[in-house]
Image (cartoon, rainbow, N blue to C red; front, side, top):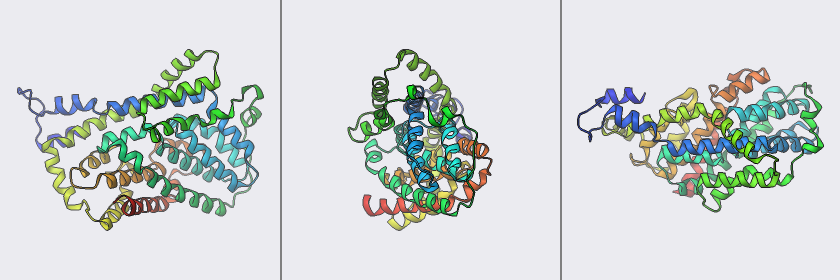
Length: 396
């Protein structure tokens, strides 16, 4: 897409003049490393997630939640929604969904939650937690061109908006749930755990450490993750810490190999749309539809938010990165660009049936992946609208 855009706009492949903008040098070569900071943050975030897994912290959080839960489906659903959100502040990606889903989905089903709703709660909790995962903040900073201060100061608006929507959706879905109590084949070790494998409860706060360091102390993200890893190691004190660190790093990189490849492509796309030739074609079109008034912001992001579905033109991990990068130069308020694109990103994370983790959840629960789109899109559009209204009232 980056190359095609440049070709249509008339950017040459090569040039004898080193100062000229070309496809090979300016877009392919330089664009491949444009998202380097986000890629590094992604690797360190995946490393942290693997450390939490290898130290038993992730499973310990889930098992403790199962012990504290009761036979009431709604209470269990809310508990596991919160627990999943906490876990995903420190980890993300398909691997983490598989790890957590293999534990929490059978437990929820065994307490009377339907298979679809069990998968939905995992999806909602994972997406909400990922919103507060600091590695994703680097992506927003690099793709949209907004400062970390804007992200720290305004992330709470889409977070609170979607938190309310998710809780209402969970209550609504569980109340409608007519499924009978079901069973799921699980080992006693998986549901209860061994006494000698329990980890200190203080370690359950580990996934939140990088968020607190970045949000409260305004620490840079990668140092915050490194400190969080060291804190987890000090609390658990594994017998072979270097082995935990090295193997966790290797497996963490494997977990994010696909997103890294995607970031290389996004970097090329951002470089392409930033060229005078391509931006000269796209910017006039965007300028005709980019709003400048409060009501315009609300209508723009709310009505167009479904365009993120099926990797559409507003999908942040795709063409939406290029469009979002042109919004601020086009005259849109940077705060509203961040709030709007962040809210649309949450909508995509919950409702897009092409997400790899949504497909896995549907397969694991033996449900239809399209149902996750049909039964969440309306609620998510509402979450986008509330986010933008809060931004208009508070930030503007």
